[in-house]
Length: 150
Image 1 (cartoon, rainbow, N blue to C red):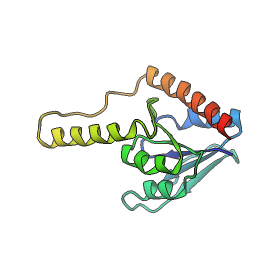
Image 2: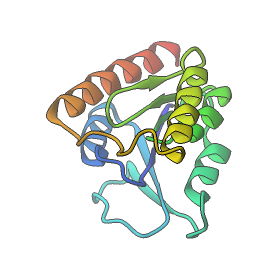
Image 3: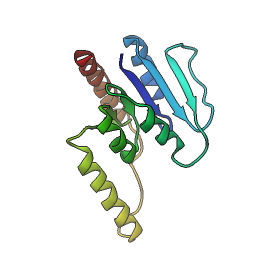
């Protein structure tokens, strides 16, 4: 059975994910460096890791399995999970897979270079309602795809 694994660091769609997962009877594993308030639901589990840099990412990359759905904003974590047969979705509804992750990593590196050189500044635009709508649509689509494969 597929699981949803959430990189809780700055994840804006945890509550939405819990609701959708409950409707589909999927286990949700939330990975965080600190304790978080969680729903009182046996289908939602909190995995607290050490406060070390990248501890949550390392736990996720080590423990995901083929057919899991990973929710993260971290492109490098996505690149570590995809070869294991996972699907990756961002809170803004972007899907990463074997066909798209290479370009995403390259764009991330280019943007980092441009920021370091002072050519650009700033980060992501604020999270908006259309991001949430796109996320929910893609989440439902990916869950249905996993069910067909499973």
